[in-house]
Image (cartoon, rainbow, N blue to C red; front, side):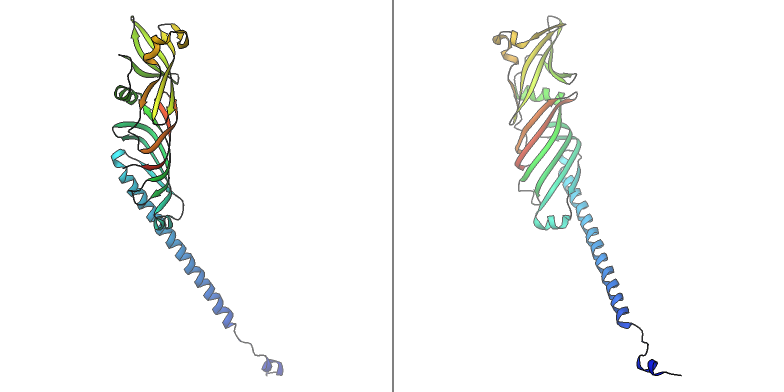
Length: 242
């Protein structure tokens, strides 16, 4: 039996609400799918870009490359990568060996013919390489070579049948390493360099090792002696690797 109330207010399914919910869910799924697709494409571009940069650096050594920042797609579209982090256990540039290379390159152009805006880097120049550079770009006393003892840099040789060690203080000066004698050890005797007349120490003072082989725009910021060689910090703007 139908009452007046039932006839006046019939029950109908909430079709509009159901359709709206379905539309919202579909829209959300589409948006999420697009976001996931964009991220996936960006990661692929990021990987291929890192691989390409690593291949370009192969003439200098095996490098690990990390393109930092997200998304990479917009950086590529803009023609410049924000930050590229490059590390290598060993590298060779212009016939000069480096170890423990760690470099950050900022505002790196996609067009490799253009210079990199800013470079901050560190590396170690092995002792054998220092000897080679000194022989080519400086005048060392005959028969002497660089060595490190307890983190200090020395020139090592022999005199009167005894071991001769000359303590060296390295200093960074633009694109040169300046090494200055501080102490002299002959056998067990140690002498402060300031107590010796300058005409006797002129050949071991202010020895300059030119680093003109460095990429244009890159200069020494700091230098320190380590057990494996000279640890250098580099800084540069408008740096070109070509």
